[in-house]
Length: 158
Image (cartoon, rainbow, N blue to C red; front, side, top):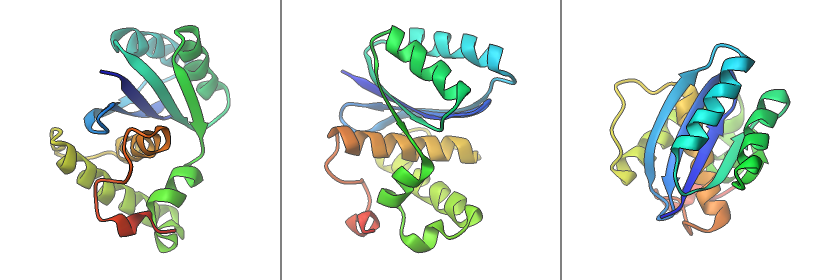
């Protein structure tokens, strides 16, 4: 079994782990507090995940470099994307008109992925975890672990 880790990058980070069958295994939100704790946390997270083949990172700058450098050190393939990249594939244009609309749509679609995967349902779903779920979905579609999103195919229309 191979795994893909999706990262909605920041000091407050959303994480989602997918198996190579395309299903979501777990998701969470983690507040590292500062860059030094993030650096230690990234090392720990990547060390704990056996058979991790891919890391998909949304975002850039010095915090993304921490993820990318540690993944590359462990010979894990990385893809760095922007929010626009995955939103363009998974959202209608109307869902991208405002930040609030995009966050609401991300929450809705992330819950559909959770249900489809049979993952533990959240009591509350933070926006960074919801976005990590969708970043991961984009990732498994991008690398070919899934051919189409698990919901109605019309959501893939641009």
